[in-house]
Image (tube, rainbow, N blue to C red; front, side, top):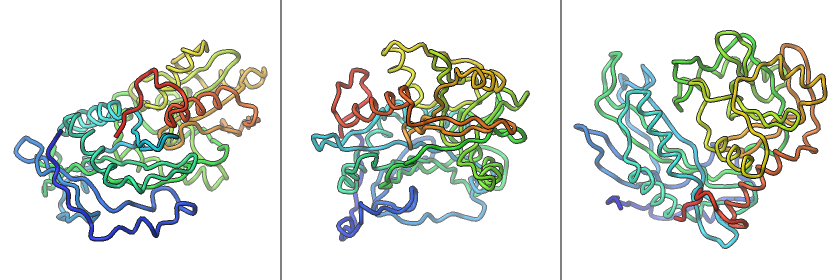
Length: 351
């Protein structure tokens, strides 16, 4: 266990927080944060302290050249009122893959998990208990050098924030395939959870939103033909008796919920394929009545059903209430988290 200095606030305000009427996702924060500094080639100054602003020089390298990464994970209560994390080791590993791609120092896995456990334990009263709610955990790392120069920083700060949150999506979503803009390219930074991927998506996302759609479905950068992922999630399609999801080709995020769903569906006996999936194949399957379900998968939503998909003007609509595989996947993961069924995959870690 890493030695973490803990400085608590004088008086908690959690008793005044209305868990039945929480603000939109990302707007409410708990009272403490974890911080650590990377200086002279090592991580040091491990501390949990009251949530506060950062002091940055205007030349901070992150502000100019985007050397920053993050993760998104959650803490829950089981039905036995035991606080747990979902697949923290996998999140730590993905965080370090992002760090490697962005020329940033890796975080020791034990420090990553110890920091999160210590922070969540301190903020345990902030974990919502309502169905679909959780304590969202946001680990991030930023460059700290005050240098205007295109080169990796020598110093960094690792921070963990926690946010009480309700259900990310409480209804089925509509998607529009992006025919003109792309999220990522092979050889780029699509696999990394870095700010630039998301910043670049905002303009095309707003265009889709103005047209009445909830999210974009990204296509490959070369041919604008093959499905990659949704704006905030990986994506699955049920075609006939097969579940298909785009393969990890360097431009698709290694989704942890994606991996969970693939694992449990295969064990259930479903045929699951990770491969190239073209929009032509999707439209053909829809016309033949073979495209039965479309759903997104991610930490925030677990599973988000899609009831409308627009591909270059061709509108495909789905009765999301009839989805069976999407419901099975979401209910299974929720039941594992709640302790209702056995965690045979070792996904749950107690705090």
